[in-house]
Image (tube, rainbow, N blue to C red; front, side, top):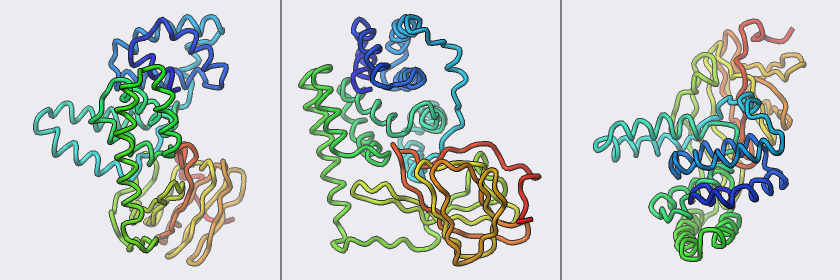
Length: 331
């Protein structure tokens, strides 16, 4: 992915066919390649992406990969991380007064659409972005995206290895500048992780309230007190309050999910199994990859703490809504 990103971003189309074939042989899927080019159109420009598509089409034809089949790849959007609200607000405050349409496109198309597509995981989107920015010498943007890459599941060692690999394809000066920028972010993260001197972070109830997105929930849902592990930990979560009748969509978690009910009454169901009741003090474990939903009862609100680990930057895959017929209590 690093090699292909650099070649597309720098317009090296003559080198693409061999590396595209190698990428497919090494396990990159055709849908991931399509997702990479779409992503790079925003970060390296449409001309570079369109030029790359000409070569990709030839390789796909040689391998008998059917381009129309790529349109069938699931595009159920992934959830935006809780931290995106702060990023969007920064864009509104600093960019919108100068270029309002650019700010709108940045928030509504780049991050609320492109970054939520599921043909690439958030981890891999960050890898592609960091590679393209490093190859282009875009240091100002690289600092933000190295931090985002760490949030999305890339480790410092993986970022350093990607930039080392990139040196052979984009040149030593670009790699050196990128490594220097990444090093500053790594140092800041280390200071932040150890600044309290205690090794313990306490998140109080009701912090950073946000409404549960209507695309993932039915009814009134509030998400508060989000938390995330530091120092490479993949654990994160939040407190979620469902008003009567509110519930999640069907969804899965790549590494499972733990629910700890702290107030009210709720229901939870795995696909193909009976609906189960939840009450305060209950802990509920949903196994990795199990399609399920959870929420309040029809008559009573419910609050739980939801905890999950990220796999390649992805913690949840959202699916279709839970219909009124599916939403009921235990038989």
